[in-house]
Image (cartoon, rainbow, N blue to C red; front, side, top):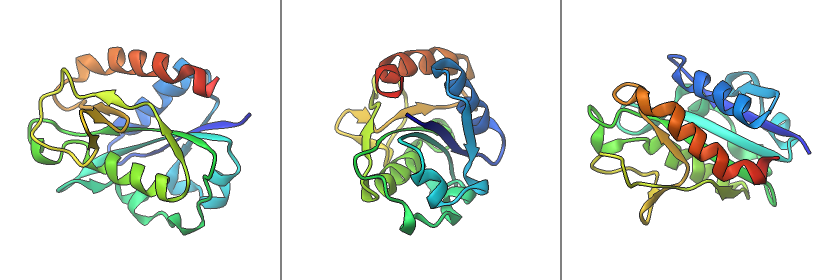
Length: 163
């Protein structure tokens, strides 16, 4: 079974978390979305995808430029994580993660790894369905001290699906 962690990162935070997640799960393939295409992602059995949120809830530039039309993820397990600023952009916190999750679902992905919104402080997010984020939401701008513990809890939650 082949698994990759795929990220789009402009400032390095998402890349750092992608590498941390890969380390915790023992995944050797960590890919920058700027350097791959749909065929490359289709070659994996499972994916963990991460993006930062820009502007008013926009996808990170490299994800925004990615051609999702060739993505074929039917029957594949996918988890998502996102970086955001819960204080300065409280009304669009990690919304890009929600947009990315939607595009991956449209490509057929089965999403895993939803995280309760309990313990988070924000106004709204396109990444929330019910009372859960569609994946792991992180804020290295204001709550970097919580990143590792949240990654630990999330990787423990999804480990069985990515082992």
